[in-house]
Amino acid sequence: MADHSSSPSPRSSNLSAVTRFAWGDFEALSYTWGNQTSTQQIIMNGKIWNVSENLENALRALLLRPETRNGMHYWIDALCINQADEDERNHQVKRMQTIYSDARAVVVWVGEPKEHEYKASQFLYEVNRVVLQEPDGPPSFLYDLGQEVLQETESFFRKPYWQRLWIIQELAVNHHSTL
Image (cartoon, rainbow, N blue to C red; front, top):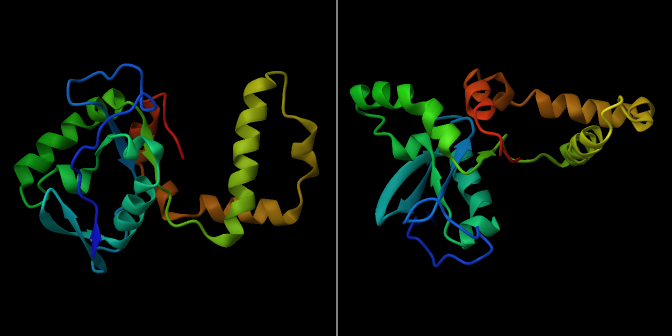
């Protein structure tokens, strides 16, 4: 059983020079729930929770982030909304735009990385970096891509995450989204 307790750890200056709230700050997780019949147990605030394997994997990845080690809080719908209470779910859905826009950042979890997708993620990172610096058009290296990189990139964008309509709202309203 993984222990993903959310007890705050001391903040350090690495998190942010100034936090926006007395209790610190929060980031929102954008992810897919995944298969709800295959769950893992986590411990949060001393209570056992059953979460999807995909969410458990995302929580493990969040634990590795410097922000987490420095006390960052996370808003995660499956944990922050009482899913058994339809009235609460409906109320929270109306607040989603505010939650995601107010978050310090939106952290994107597209799922467990597959070995063949590493080149694709490196390629996409490089395209983002270069295109932002080259407003006059795509750099020449885009025309010299190998078939392998193109296939890996296609595989990356076939992940269930990209099929969700909610990602438009989750990512568009926050200008600090991170993969």
